[in-house]
Length: 212
Image (tube, rainbow, N blue to C red):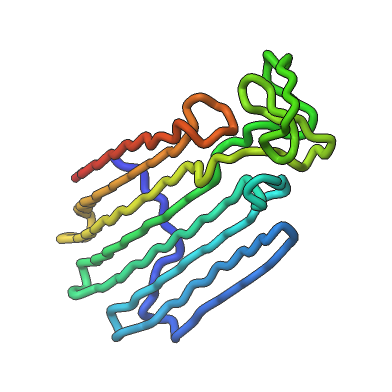
C-alpha cells in the first residue's frame, strides 16, 4: 500500500498565478518562500515552489569573529500534471532540499569543561588562559571561544515520483506510483570536542530508495 500526501497541484483550469513572501529578523535571519502555477494547455500545467531560510545565530565566537549556530536551508518542489486522455491522469513531481547548520558550540558563557585546573602565565586563546581541554570561560553568556572552523551538519535530499491514474471503466481504477529518493548527510565535527582546530573529521552517509 501507499500513503499519499498531496501538496497543492498544478491545475490547467487556473490562469497564471503565484505568491511570494520575504521576511527578516535580527541575527541575520531571512525567510523567503514562493510558488507559481503556469497552465500550458487545456490539459497540462506546471507548478513550482521554493523556500529559503538563513540565520547567523545569537552566540558570538570571539576567536573567529562569527556568530553561531548558523543555519542555511533551501527547498524546492515542482510538478507537471497532464490528462492526455479523459480517463488517464499523469503527474510527475520532483523535490529537493539542502539543510546546513553549524556544529555544536564548544563552550558558552561561564560553563566550562572539566579538569580546569591549569594555570598559564601567557594567555594563548582569546587573550585568556584555556584549561587542559582548551576551553576558555567567558563572563558573557552569548560569547564562546573556539578555533574550529566550519563544523556543520549538511543534509541534502532529492526525490521524484511518477503517478499514473487510469480508469478503464466506471467502477475500476488503477493507480501506479513510481518513486525515487536519495539522501546524503555529511557531518563535520571536532571529535575531541575541544575548541582547538586539531581533529576535524567528516562523517558521510548516503541512502537511496526506489519503489513501485
